[in-house]
Length: 151
Image 1 (cartoon, helix red, strand yellow):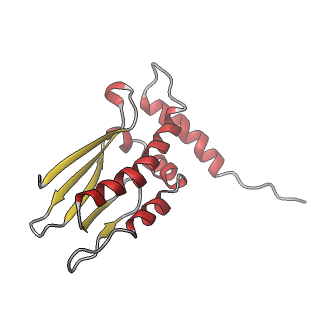
Image 2 (spheres, one colour):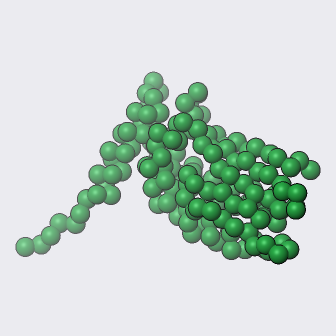
Image 3 (spheres, helix red, strand yellow):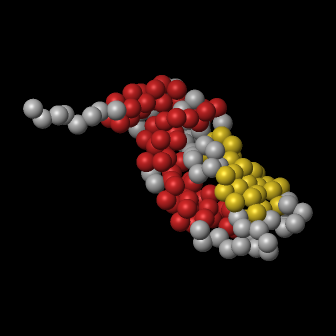
């Protein structure tokens, strides 16, 4: 069994501009597993939008639903630091499968939802940045609208 592992999740297939999330797994000498999520520049330029869209997809509920089912191992309970799409890391997980299950069944669907929303504005020949900016304009204009007041 390897002590270090890197899982790469390409979220779209648009060539060298493809957004990719990377999960680094590490097995500690005491037998616990910890993880850290990293992302490439494509996600970095869309961080606020990406995080908001992932939250809209129910990220926190999905993560906490799975996280609360992870059993304790030894003296330590699993710890999750950050429940956002961009800042997630954890430690004291009892096994590799519990980490992979959390990533693939909670985080990954929300990441894909966010990228799919951005890709709706992507056309061949455009850049990822152009699609991000177009999606930001659409998304923030809808989010910032207020209900009309009656007179």
